[in-house]
Length: 403
Image (tube, rainbow, N blue to C red; front, side, top):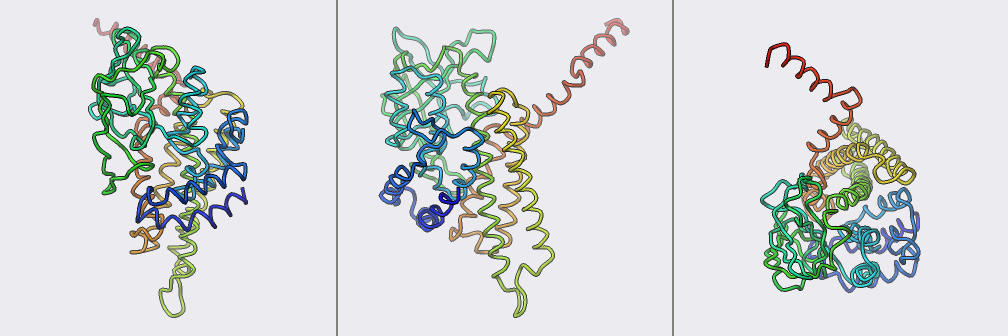
């Protein structure tokens, strides 16, 4: 980890200001060179097995590395484990056919192409993946896909999308209505409408959130991932792993923000004799942030270890807990760091403002806080017989009242 931390500090941090001010495309020549260096150092695609060209790390091991990479907005990209590509690689490994792996997975694993994941729709609640309007209807050996998606991260410049679409609308079980289909981005009928402006930043290529339209897109049925109707199950597994990835990346952001905060506290003079660190209020902020970052790391790593030992479905409640908790700790640490930096914190001379813009969504994407809290409460109360007891009480009351 020390070697990777040093590499980021020496080679990557100096590029960040150029990235913030000029955009991803302006850095591409330098980033490609750095990616080749990462390959030569043997740190490429840490989430993939050695057979697939990666480092072969467990989820727990990758989580610890993800924290280090998360300390720069460019870290995960340089090591080829950035979202949404990492999730698409994991899905293709488990559910892709050999042909799909060769055509779509291998270029991702080699860092030749990028991809996106199209699930969220503007007219339906993004927190309920069983309700969506984009459909895929069989037409001979093809699917005809129609619908609209948005917040399709990384669509600008992607080679293909993995799209969540309704294939079996008449199936009674809502969780069995959708499937996931690989859709090449250059296919006729697929249009990127716009890159959605996020807090004033339009984004492009690597850091974009696009709105896309499927208008009679004809895709071979061989592009179906897994079984028809398995889209929800695939997305659930993807999101469980993804929340671990996100949480550890957020902790990395917290650590970098904390480092910047402490450096600023001991260097920024408030008078001839005092600096910010002399203030009891600032020391309280620093202490609280240190406590919460350490506690959050321990919590997330314990869940990653549990998944490694017991499987992806072993700790759905725990995953909701860490997702809510880490996202909120992230907001607190960033807010304190920006406040301590004063006007400087609002500029792009540090990564703080960038993260504040992009990571406010941490409390929304992959399930908003409110939905996760609802699931946590439901899981907790189930251990006490609720809602079964409530239903029983309602039935008894109905009988007693002659209803």
